[in-house]
Image (cartoon, rainbow, N blue to C red):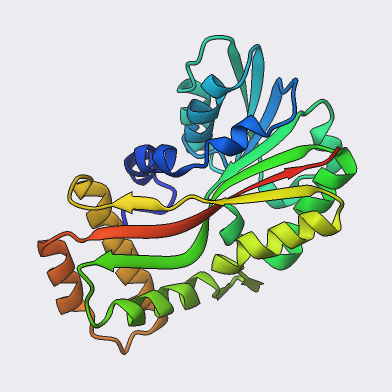
Length: 255
């Protein structure tokens, strides 16, 4: 993969992200949302998708630990009636006091990169501040390819194991994140609604599909180096399959 958080990769995936997100959850958001904090904002794609769907005026606080991405995000959210500021920092450091005056917290493709303890702390901060959350595109561990190949299930299993890996002393939730976060929010007193938000890939999105395949197979190979996947990847890249890559969107409302 070009780089999980590179501008190139995030730019490639933005149209697929926009198509996949569950728009009906937006209609369920509380009224009078004007200040939104976007965690792990990347290039700002969540704001570009959501801001036009909400009434103005709006103020977005774009939060990311990568100063380069943060600069890009704050410079590329050009929506009428929307102001933007940057907040450099890690999502795991968020506290209830940071949410003073915030109406909604959003994130995209983030929960699966956190641990159980980090999700617990994030939910606790939101619960204490009574701030609702819209968390989109969490990996769900559900991938299907057409036409199917014999090694599809093996690659998918190895990829899911990689998503749940331990790194730097942290055990990532990976595809367990949506269910774990949903339960944590419910225990904290939130009303939780989830929706599937699968990517639809294929020959009509050749660059993204090819890059996703390289990353998907590469992660499986990292997890299980004994697998010989060179031929499999070459075959898949030669004739791009139709692919459904499962994600989950989660809305949690305190009220």
